[in-house]
Image (cartoon, rainbow, N blue to C red; front, side):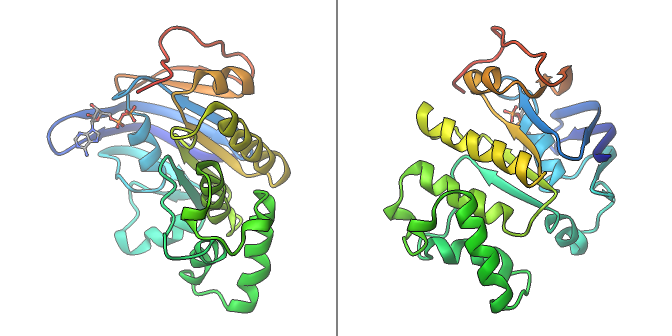
Length: 237
Ligand code: ADP
């Protein structure tokens, strides 16, 4: 079953830069997909269109039945409810505890406190941070902070988890732990995962579908397990 369908999509920024050109791609429910390509190739633009941080200039981007291209600003919350996003720099609220950071995502949806609590505890358990529930972000390692961000992104049981360079600030061992958690979420919760990355070690090891951007164009789409890293991906930006 298709979760994402992008057809004849273009993104031209106001300054005239074409970031995405004639993109056609579909992603099924439950897939794990890496998005790779050198800096400036269009990865972030593609990912941002999926959660309507950027609007396509032309064409369709359909996510969970919602056409992002036609979605009004006042209805963006309907899309955002269906997905979670994890960023390179974690984006936790420094004055809130781990629990509060994760709960905040549900409070802003208007959910009642008694419904929030079990869900938050479950999400924190899913990322292996039960012991740190009452800690503040500055009392956690980078990897732990990213796990909080993942818990926050999955607490609403989204169909789709979008990760934009989630291991970009982490050392190789910590990155491995984060990837184990993402793989578990994909396999056990059935969450579709789309992850932009520069880390070719991870992409090589995980043997997932890999889509490659070059100059705004989808240059290759390697089915699960068929990708082998080559020189065009660099580990650093
Ligand atoms: P990547 O994530 O692969 O590094 P991006 O999607 O960020 O690539 O960028 C694709 C192209 O669009 C680049 O040429 C970049 O300079 C340009 N670009 C990205 N964001 C903007 C913006 N807000 N305004 C104008 N140009 C942009």
